[in-house]
Image (tube, rainbow, N blue to C red; front, side, top):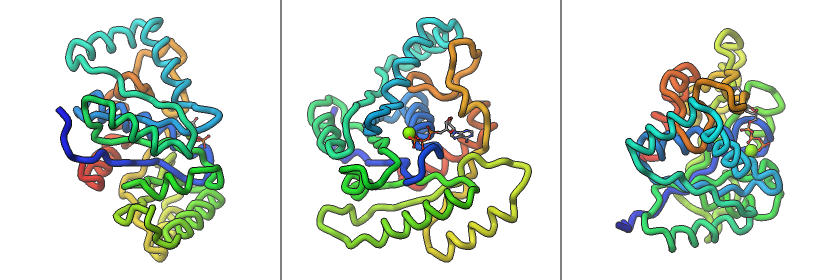
Length: 255
Ligand SMILES: Nc1ncnc2c1ncn2[C@@H]1O[C@H](COP(=O)(O)OP(=O)(O)OP(=O)(O)O)[C@@H](O)[C@H]1O
Ligand SMILES: [Mg+2]
Protein backbone atom coordinates (compact mmCIF):
# COMPACT_ATOMS: atom_id res chain seq x y z
CA UNK A 1 0.00 0.00 0.00
CA UNK A 2 1.23 3.47 -0.78
CA UNK A 3 1.50 5.80 2.13
CA UNK A 4 1.53 9.56 1.81
CA UNK A 5 4.84 9.84 3.63
CA UNK A 6 7.57 11.15 1.36
CA UNK A 7 10.75 9.11 1.17
CA UNK A 8 13.79 10.69 2.77
CA UNK A 9 16.48 11.74 0.34
CA UNK A 10 19.92 11.04 1.71
CA UNK A 11 23.40 11.32 0.32
CA UNK A 12 26.77 10.28 1.65
CA UNK A 13 28.64 13.03 0.01
CA UNK A 14 31.85 14.94 0.06
CA UNK A 15 34.02 16.69 -2.41
CA UNK A 16 36.99 14.51 -1.65
CA UNK A 17 37.22 11.20 -3.49
CA UNK A 18 37.86 7.81 -1.96
CA UNK A 19 36.78 8.48 1.62
CA UNK A 20 33.91 6.01 1.75
CA UNK A 21 30.79 7.47 0.11
CA UNK A 22 29.87 4.43 -1.98
CA UNK A 23 30.93 1.94 0.68
CA UNK A 24 28.84 3.58 3.37
CA UNK A 25 25.87 3.90 1.02
CA UNK A 26 25.90 0.15 0.42
CA UNK A 27 26.47 -0.88 4.02
CA UNK A 28 23.71 1.32 5.40
CA UNK A 29 21.30 0.60 2.52
CA UNK A 30 21.67 -3.17 2.92
CA UNK A 31 21.20 -3.21 6.70
CA UNK A 32 18.13 -0.96 6.42
CA UNK A 33 16.56 -2.90 3.57
CA UNK A 34 17.34 -6.51 4.45
CA UNK A 35 17.52 -6.46 8.21
CA UNK A 36 15.54 -3.52 9.54
CA UNK A 37 12.51 -3.73 7.25
CA UNK A 38 12.82 -0.38 5.46
CA UNK A 39 12.31 -0.03 1.72
CA UNK A 40 15.38 1.40 0.11
CA UNK A 41 16.26 2.73 -3.33
CA UNK A 42 19.76 3.65 -4.47
CA UNK A 43 20.37 6.12 -7.27
CA UNK A 44 23.84 5.57 -8.66
CA UNK A 45 24.85 8.88 -10.21
CA UNK A 46 28.56 8.32 -10.10
CA UNK A 47 29.04 8.66 -13.82
CA UNK A 48 31.06 7.20 -15.50
CA UNK A 49 32.37 4.71 -12.87
CA UNK A 50 28.94 3.63 -11.61
CA UNK A 51 30.71 1.66 -8.92
CA UNK A 52 27.50 0.55 -7.20
CA UNK A 53 25.93 -0.76 -10.40
CA UNK A 54 29.06 -2.80 -11.04
CA UNK A 55 29.14 -3.99 -7.48
CA UNK A 56 25.60 -5.32 -7.79
CA UNK A 57 26.79 -7.49 -10.69
CA UNK A 58 29.66 -8.85 -8.61
CA UNK A 59 27.33 -9.45 -5.68
CA UNK A 60 25.04 -11.51 -7.91
CA UNK A 61 27.97 -13.59 -9.13
CA UNK A 62 29.08 -14.16 -5.56
CA UNK A 63 25.72 -15.56 -4.64
CA UNK A 64 25.88 -17.95 -7.54
CA UNK A 65 29.49 -19.01 -7.07
CA UNK A 66 30.24 -18.78 -3.37
CA UNK A 67 28.62 -21.41 -1.14
CA UNK A 68 28.68 -19.18 1.93
CA UNK A 69 26.93 -16.34 0.13
CA UNK A 70 24.51 -18.70 -1.57
CA UNK A 71 23.44 -20.18 1.75
CA UNK A 72 22.99 -16.74 3.30
CA UNK A 73 20.91 -15.60 0.32
CA UNK A 74 18.66 -18.67 0.49
CA UNK A 75 18.14 -18.17 4.18
CA UNK A 76 17.35 -14.52 3.64
CA UNK A 77 14.90 -15.32 0.88
CA UNK A 78 13.20 -17.83 3.15
CA UNK A 79 13.01 -15.37 6.05
CA UNK A 80 12.08 -12.09 4.43
CA UNK A 81 11.14 -12.96 0.85
CA UNK A 82 11.85 -9.45 -0.31
CA UNK A 83 13.24 -8.14 -3.55
CA UNK A 84 16.68 -6.58 -3.62
CA UNK A 85 16.63 -2.81 -3.54
CA UNK A 86 16.93 -1.24 -6.95
CA UNK A 87 20.18 0.47 -7.93
CA UNK A 88 19.20 2.96 -10.59
CA UNK A 89 21.97 4.19 -12.83
CA UNK A 90 21.84 7.76 -14.11
CA UNK A 91 23.69 11.07 -14.22
CA UNK A 92 23.56 13.63 -11.42
CA UNK A 93 21.44 16.08 -13.37
CA UNK A 94 18.69 13.48 -13.86
CA UNK A 95 18.92 11.91 -10.41
CA UNK A 96 15.94 13.68 -8.82
CA UNK A 97 13.71 13.03 -11.84
CA UNK A 98 14.70 9.36 -11.87
CA UNK A 99 13.88 9.06 -8.19
CA UNK A 100 10.49 10.74 -8.70
CA UNK A 101 9.77 8.50 -11.65
CA UNK A 102 10.53 5.42 -9.58
CA UNK A 103 8.34 6.62 -6.71
CA UNK A 104 5.52 7.20 -9.14
CA UNK A 105 5.53 3.73 -10.61
CA UNK A 106 6.52 1.67 -7.57
CA UNK A 107 3.67 -0.03 -5.66
CA UNK A 108 5.48 0.58 -2.36
CA UNK A 109 6.65 4.01 -1.33
CA UNK A 110 10.34 3.83 -0.48
CA UNK A 111 11.28 4.95 3.02
CA UNK A 112 14.63 6.26 1.92
CA UNK A 113 16.38 7.04 -1.34
CA UNK A 114 20.17 7.16 -1.29
CA UNK A 115 21.98 9.24 -3.90
CA UNK A 116 25.58 8.23 -4.64
CA UNK A 117 26.98 11.34 -6.29
CA UNK A 118 30.36 11.97 -7.88
CA UNK A 119 33.00 13.52 -5.68
CA UNK A 120 33.53 16.62 -7.73
CA UNK A 121 30.98 19.23 -6.83
CA UNK A 122 31.35 21.01 -10.15
CA UNK A 123 30.01 18.06 -12.13
CA UNK A 124 26.73 19.10 -13.72
CA UNK A 125 23.80 18.52 -11.43
CA UNK A 126 25.70 17.61 -8.27
CA UNK A 127 25.02 20.83 -6.37
CA UNK A 128 21.38 21.10 -7.42
CA UNK A 129 20.78 17.48 -6.41
CA UNK A 130 22.61 17.93 -3.12
CA UNK A 131 20.53 21.01 -2.34
CA UNK A 132 17.40 18.86 -2.40
CA UNK A 133 18.60 16.21 0.03
CA UNK A 134 16.94 15.90 3.43
CA UNK A 135 20.23 14.73 4.92
CA UNK A 136 23.82 14.85 3.80
CA UNK A 137 26.32 12.69 5.65
CA UNK A 138 29.85 13.68 4.87
CA UNK A 139 32.74 11.33 5.68
CA UNK A 140 36.05 12.80 6.79
CA UNK A 141 39.32 11.12 7.55
CA UNK A 142 42.06 12.43 9.81
CA UNK A 143 44.14 13.74 6.95
CA UNK A 144 44.82 17.44 6.74
CA UNK A 145 43.86 17.74 3.08
CA UNK A 146 40.65 15.78 3.56
CA UNK A 147 39.59 17.78 6.61
CA UNK A 148 40.45 21.12 5.04
CA UNK A 149 38.70 20.45 1.75
CA UNK A 150 35.66 18.91 3.44
CA UNK A 151 35.27 21.74 5.90
CA UNK A 152 35.65 24.45 3.32
CA UNK A 153 33.20 22.69 1.05
CA UNK A 154 30.66 22.12 3.83
CA UNK A 155 30.97 25.71 4.95
CA UNK A 156 30.54 27.07 1.42
CA UNK A 157 27.66 24.71 0.75
CA UNK A 158 25.83 25.66 3.94
CA UNK A 159 26.28 29.32 3.08
CA UNK A 160 24.81 29.06 -0.41
CA UNK A 161 21.88 31.45 -0.65
CA UNK A 162 18.60 29.80 0.22
CA UNK A 163 16.88 29.48 -3.12
CA UNK A 164 13.37 28.27 -3.84
CA UNK A 165 14.82 25.00 -5.11
CA UNK A 166 16.71 24.28 -1.92
CA UNK A 167 15.44 22.04 0.85
CA UNK A 168 15.19 24.39 3.82
CA UNK A 169 15.06 21.64 6.41
CA UNK A 170 18.21 20.02 5.17
CA UNK A 171 20.79 18.82 7.68
CA UNK A 172 24.46 18.22 6.95
CA UNK A 173 26.42 15.98 9.31
CA UNK A 174 30.10 15.17 9.26
CA UNK A 175 31.42 11.86 10.53
CA UNK A 176 34.83 10.29 11.02
CA UNK A 177 35.63 7.32 8.84
CA UNK A 178 38.70 5.07 8.68
CA UNK A 179 39.63 5.77 12.27
CA UNK A 180 42.66 3.97 13.58
CA UNK A 181 41.69 3.08 17.14
CA UNK A 182 45.18 3.22 18.57
CA UNK A 183 46.43 6.72 18.03
CA UNK A 184 45.89 10.33 17.03
CA UNK A 185 43.38 11.18 19.77
CA UNK A 186 44.92 14.65 20.03
CA UNK A 187 44.63 15.15 16.31
CA UNK A 188 40.94 14.24 16.37
CA UNK A 189 40.35 16.53 19.34
CA UNK A 190 42.03 19.42 17.53
CA UNK A 191 39.96 18.90 14.39
CA UNK A 192 36.84 18.55 16.48
CA UNK A 193 37.45 21.97 17.98
CA UNK A 194 37.66 23.47 14.52
CA UNK A 195 34.47 21.69 13.44
CA UNK A 196 32.67 22.89 16.53
CA UNK A 197 33.81 26.46 15.93
CA UNK A 198 32.37 26.26 12.42
CA UNK A 199 29.10 25.00 13.92
CA UNK A 200 28.90 22.01 11.62
CA UNK A 201 27.31 19.02 13.36
CA UNK A 202 29.57 16.03 13.84
CA UNK A 203 28.38 12.50 14.54
CA UNK A 204 29.64 10.81 17.67
CA UNK A 205 30.42 7.46 16.11
CA UNK A 206 33.86 7.02 14.63
CA UNK A 207 33.90 4.28 12.03
CA UNK A 208 36.97 2.09 12.35
CA UNK A 209 39.57 1.56 9.73
CA UNK A 210 39.29 -2.10 8.79
CA UNK A 211 40.45 -4.25 5.93
CA UNK A 212 36.89 -5.59 5.71
CA UNK A 213 35.91 -2.38 3.95
CA UNK A 214 38.67 -2.60 1.43
CA UNK A 215 38.32 -6.21 0.60
CA UNK A 216 35.69 -6.54 -2.03
CA UNK A 217 34.40 -10.08 -1.79
CA UNK A 218 36.48 -12.04 -4.29
CA UNK A 219 34.31 -15.12 -4.05
CA UNK A 220 36.34 -16.92 -1.41
CA UNK A 221 35.37 -15.22 1.87
CA UNK A 222 33.30 -16.91 4.46
CA UNK A 223 31.80 -13.70 5.70
CA UNK A 224 29.48 -11.00 4.45
CA UNK A 225 30.24 -7.34 4.83
CA UNK A 226 29.96 -4.98 1.89
CA UNK A 227 27.19 -6.42 -0.28
CA UNK A 228 24.20 -4.88 -1.99
CA UNK A 229 22.25 -8.14 -1.76
CA UNK A 230 22.91 -9.14 1.85
CA UNK A 231 23.29 -7.14 5.06
CA UNK A 232 26.67 -7.10 6.79
CA UNK A 233 27.08 -9.64 9.56
CA UNK A 234 26.38 -8.35 13.04
CA UNK A 235 29.79 -9.22 14.50
CA UNK A 236 31.50 -7.28 11.70
CA UNK A 237 29.18 -4.32 12.17
CA UNK A 238 30.16 -4.29 15.83
CA UNK A 239 33.88 -4.66 15.18
CA UNK A 240 33.89 -1.68 12.80
CA UNK A 241 31.45 0.45 14.88
CA UNK A 242 29.03 0.38 11.95
CA UNK A 243 26.30 -0.83 14.33
CA UNK A 244 26.66 2.35 16.39
CA UNK A 245 26.82 4.41 13.24
CA UNK A 246 23.54 2.99 11.96
CA UNK A 247 21.91 3.51 15.34
CA UNK A 248 22.98 7.16 15.34
CA UNK A 249 21.98 7.53 11.69
CA UNK A 250 18.44 6.33 12.49
CA UNK A 251 18.21 8.71 15.42
CA UNK A 252 19.27 11.71 13.33
CA UNK A 253 17.00 10.92 10.40
CA UNK A 254 14.01 9.85 12.55
CA UNK A 255 13.49 6.96 10.18
N1 LIG B 1 36.35 2.47 7.40
C1 LIG B 1 37.13 2.06 6.38
N2 LIG B 1 38.22 1.31 6.62
C2 LIG B 1 39.00 0.89 5.62
N3 LIG B 1 38.78 1.15 4.33
C3 LIG B 1 37.71 1.89 4.02
C4 LIG B 1 36.80 2.38 5.01
N4 LIG B 1 35.83 3.08 4.38
C5 LIG B 1 36.11 3.02 3.06
N5 LIG B 1 37.22 2.31 2.83
C6 LIG B 1 37.86 2.01 1.53
O1 LIG B 1 38.26 3.19 0.89
C7 LIG B 1 38.14 3.06 -0.51
C8 LIG B 1 37.27 4.18 -1.06
O2 LIG B 1 35.94 4.00 -0.62
P1 LIG B 1 34.71 4.36 -1.54
O3 LIG B 1 34.85 3.80 -2.89
O4 LIG B 1 33.48 4.02 -0.77
O5 LIG B 1 34.89 5.92 -1.57
P2 LIG B 1 34.13 7.01 -2.43
O6 LIG B 1 34.12 8.21 -1.56
O7 LIG B 1 32.84 6.47 -2.91
O8 LIG B 1 35.14 7.20 -3.63
P3 LIG B 1 34.89 7.92 -5.06
O9 LIG B 1 35.12 9.36 -4.82
O10 LIG B 1 35.91 7.29 -5.92
O11 LIG B 1 33.47 7.60 -5.47
C9 LIG B 1 37.54 1.70 -0.78
O12 LIG B 1 38.56 0.79 -1.11
C10 LIG B 1 36.90 1.35 0.54
O13 LIG B 1 36.78 -0.01 0.72
MG1 LIG C 1 32.12 6.26 -4.90
